[in-house]
Image (tube, rainbow, N blue to C red; front, side, top):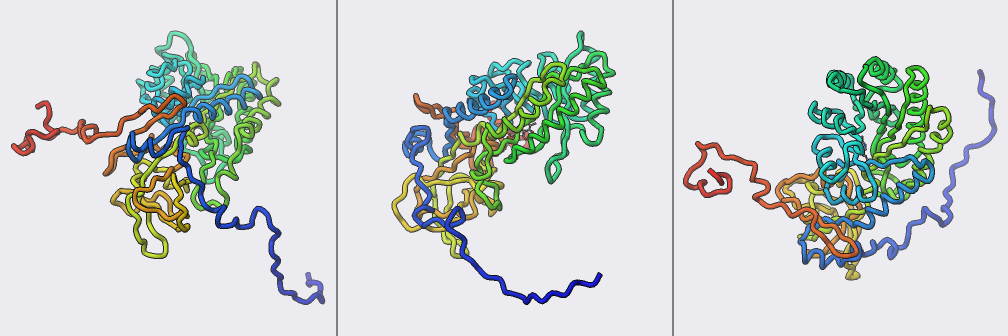
Length: 464
Ligand SMILES: Cc1ncc(COP(=O)(O)O)c(C=O)c1O
């Protein structure tokens, strides 16, 4: 088709200043990071004098508050809600014990975590057992104690079917469903809902005399700031559950929407700070429970709702105190501040721009620093770029919101793990001792032909 002729002449674009508002750059004084000199009411300098640096501090009150807020937000909208705290997110016993004292169930993905929950008094029937691989021994114990086991694969289902032959009475099991709501796909776990794999598995379970399919589980990703993702996840689970109740004459007693609720931490390379993206407990609760309330009457009886928050409960309750040990010239304009907290105890530095605040501001000029750790590796970088009042060796800094995945994914590398304390109104308790050389070397053994006079008295040949 011939293009209509137009007589309009080209006009060059004009630039207009944006009106003052949220995009306006704040004045320099407002960009000065405010100091943080106390944690849970305790003076940071005194904490370091008592327990050393680096020091990891769990604020018990904040931990309880995070749990209570989430619990209240969901129960107000769907009273039969239970929170299973994701143990792998932070398996310090004191942390799990605090959450348990608030009423949390345990969500575990290994025998180690299962036993940890049992040791802390969580009965088996208040444990949600997930994960792509559970050993035969772990499965047997979990079924014996009435845990909610979510099956992850055909091979695991086969093993459970074999195990079920020894059950005296039928046992309930759950199915982990894989729902594709994200990119890249979160598809390592469970049975595809869209592909029909989950329906095949449900039919296979229905044929088994000693198994009852009683629950559906989905965990569609981690750090998901959009509550809409959860609305879509639970809608899929509801649709599938109703189909199973109808077609296979089942009663689906629980739906579990997993974890992933984001915190105010900021991912690398994002435009907006995490604080601006983060949804509230109430936002998540409304997104998840509204579809449930709508569908409630279609179920044989309204299902129990399980959540498995990890980072949402623990991230913001934990801080790491670190000391500047050297200030170095970098290769360009930016200086490097070498701190005593490295990525071995702060692996989340690989994906978050953690908030780092000075304990004291002497009023010096603002400077741009690369915060590097003490490890003898170039990749040991805690923050690529941070503007702080000028630093010098000995200054204390607080790295905020480090409760999720840092302890459980930490490693002893070059330096030992530091002391972990829990701070509360009545004082401060050590919840994990600083590691010693002996702790690291104790499991080692020196083969006899390597034992010489020089080694005879070493720790390695102790007890021979
Ligand atoms: C099955 C399951 N539930 C809960 C969680 C906790 O996730 P988050 O810490 O993002 O809340 C995870 C973590 O990946 C998980 O795999």
